[in-house]
Amino acid sequence: MIVIYLYLFDGSGRKRLYINSRMENIITHLCGGYYRSFARFKQQVKNMEESMTFLQDCARFLQESADGGDDPKKIRFTHLFFETYGKQLAGPCGCSDLILDHQLIKVNHREFFIDLMHASLSLGVMDCHSDHLARNLQAVFDVGFALSTLQRKLRADTRLTNRLHEKLKHYKDW
Image 1: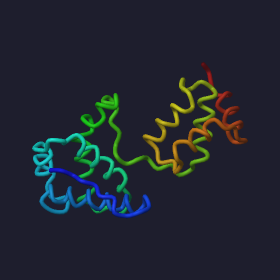
Image 2: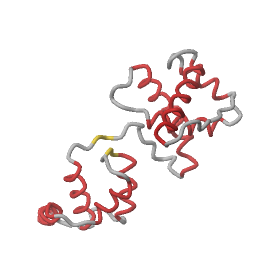
Image 3: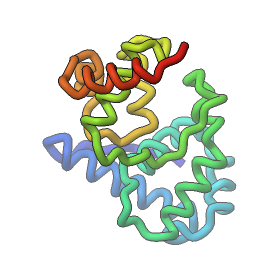
């Protein structure tokens, strides 16, 4: 199967909507109905020449379109997809030992969470650079910020960070 993305619309939002709609139609076709048969989907993917490219596109689509309002068939399909192809997709990235669920963990108190991470970094709880931590947090948590914003916030001192730093320092016994 050859997947061709046509950029018929101007503006990235409409373009992305078209690509997502097209990908959902392709997945539906390969499943023999709206997220009907994952076994059939696997067989169809197995027969593809450019299966890795297609799987990467599917993974991107499933991650970008995941929200709490999805129906049970799509949620089940998404879980099966990442369970089946997660290691294969992560391998070329050097992440084959770390397979993350497709749904990010929602952070309810973003500023507190970021201040806590910043204080932990400054105390040496985590031995990494703030940009490295930001990339990893972005991969696991839905903090509601772009990566660059998260990186900047992890480097900035706030009043709460200072208070958290003092509290953590008090309990630190290493």
